[in-house]
Image (cartoon, rainbow, N blue to C red):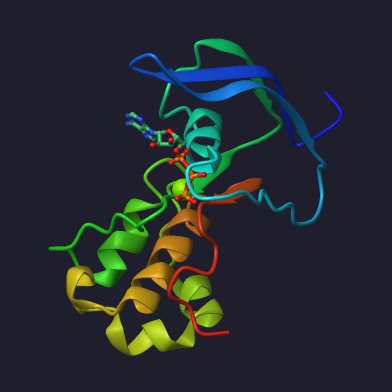
Length: 151
Ligand SMILES: Nc1ncnc2c1ncn2[C@@H]1O[C@H](COP(=O)(O)OP(=O)(O)OP(=O)(O)O)[C@@H](O)[C@H]1O
Ligand SMILES: [Mg+2]
């Protein structure tokens, strides 16, 4: 394996419609890699297959480390607090301390006891990224990185 992620000949179909057709790519082990494409091109489908949320019809995916996923649309646990949403991200890493996330996104500090579902879109995006970071991943996969965020 030469990259953080190796995808070979990936094909994904939804009820007969082909969303990904024989896709191969390598993500280098360091830095930031962007996957760009038109609406409906298959970016989210590729991300979901990479994170194990959907099963490919064909092909192989090899991941060189622990992966965490920020889904398109954030998918907060809306009735839970910001802090509890962050803690849920650590269900496997068993990390307890959310302080590093509040250091990264100081705007969240005052919101930590608020219901996540009532936050603004950009605030929810910060929680979604923070929640993924709580898993202590080697690879962070963000579907729509800047969704609702101020520069
Ligand atoms: N659950 C599903 N069932 C059927 N078709 C689907 C499903 N999810 C996605 N598709 C179709 O698969 C194709 C790829 O969708 P996908 O969500 O991967 O695109 P995308 O590149 O992430 O687009 P966007 O930029 O709008 O987020 C589209 O034609 C879409 O309509
Ligand atoms: Mg998408």
